[in-house]
Image (cartoon, rainbow, N blue to C red; front, side, top):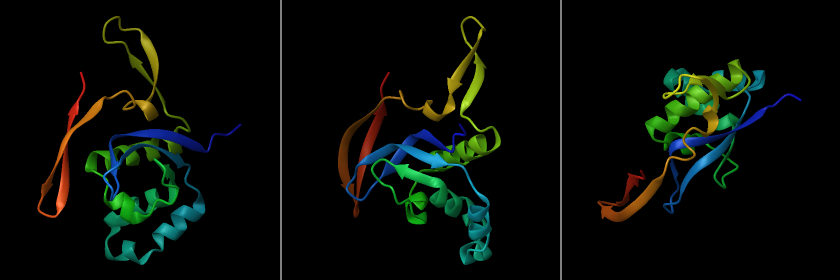
Amino acid sequence: MLQTEFDFVLPIGYRDESGRLYRKGCMRLVNAKDEIEVSNDQRIARNEDYYPILLLSRIITKLGPLTEITSEVIEKLFLADLNYLQDFHSRINSKGDTMEKVSCEKCGQPIDINMATIFENQGINEKKSKVVGKSTVTEVEKQD
């Protein structure tokens, strides 16, 4: 059976208005209608760099509990997450999967890893939040 939806885990995550952090999501394959409608969007005529934002907002089907992903959500992603999603989009639409062959650092043997979940076990702990201007900033630290 053809797989058309792929789960992913963002390296940093999307923080909503209430401060909740979402890292897990789902993306579907791009279809012709996606390409046509995004290409015809007037925002692209004004700034073609907006293309990946509009395309991702159409093909990401879930981010945490969110099931309606708007361009405003994608605009608020950290650059690392945006780059990850663009690479993820390219991977699933060209290869049809998220598996990658790599070599073990210790023994050199080939192993398969799932690039979709590469960040899943990356431990992130929130340390503390503080108000800076009109925003709340949460410091994070990586677990060892």
